[in-house]
Image (cartoon, rainbow, N blue to C red; front, top):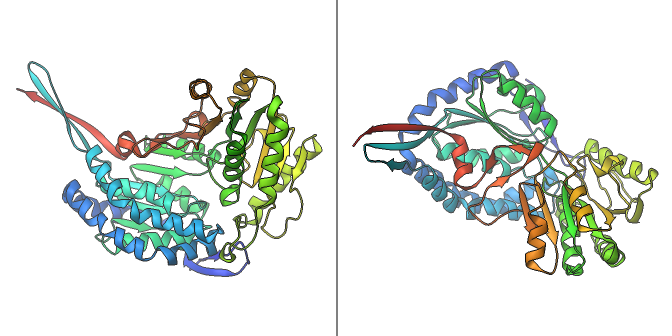
Length: 451
């Protein structure tokens, strides 16, 4: 039997191991999930909600242990990891109630007929999740899938199998057998799941893999929900609060070691304020501590050496092409990358267009708002964006010119509870959260009869 070992990116030590599911066995796993689906659907939305809500207490009880496991396996600072684990339990009941409400039938009438719009289960959902948020990303896919009456075959990232298994174990303490089944492995297992007869694939990861999934799914027209990363821009207007803008730029460029789909990867700042803004960002970046997330550091390691090498190669190439290092750029060791601030970044540089997913803040000076907007929109990605400015109406007007799916005004891109998590362009297909997001995991059916 093939074994997958999980490695601590901070120490290189083995955290644990799981058995790899042979690719040839994936269809049999899907078959088991399909056999379990009618019974799970028969509980009805309220019955399923009651079952799923039981997991909230368990998730909260294990949040500290789950957080420590997350730090050891993925690398993020312990405080962030525990926060991620806690959020699963604290928000679960509200999320379930929102899903139940979203999936309730809608009734429409005219003078002669009444139509009822139902949101039925699709059947079996294949969930393929990333390593950067190894518990919350599975939660985003699995919870609405199950609440809608689907069963799920779950293939987590090979980088964080233990976190994923710990999350699934909690759900499986209350779920009927085979309603949620975990398969472990890497590319072969993911491809086998996509090629199986699941009814839907929910995936978060790279654009390249997302395109492969979409091509494969087209053969049988499987439903897909794909979140595929970004190259998020930030625009800093002349009248912005520069301290707040710099604090956001530093936080959102470096949190989770920059390994966040909505990390700020491109910063466009007006010439008149650029000196002060750059100096403040550099000062903030230089104050971050880097080290083992279990030892109180602000920033942990990259998840593996491959991701580290990609980031360092982008930085080196940018500097060779004329970018200037304001802080960082050296002192890297093992999987630890020093927070780095670059200025003079252009679209001719790889780091100006290709997703970095690492702790690098890239600053470009612009002479006008029009230039900032044009360069911000000059990308195939379109997940998030932010604009910082003093005048609320003008700042919002600039934000409305951006082509991202989510735009923050003097704040992060994500919206309030009940809004979708949605990308534009090649950052995604379909979306998560919100009434319409929850309905992505269902088949809409319209039944019409005479009055």
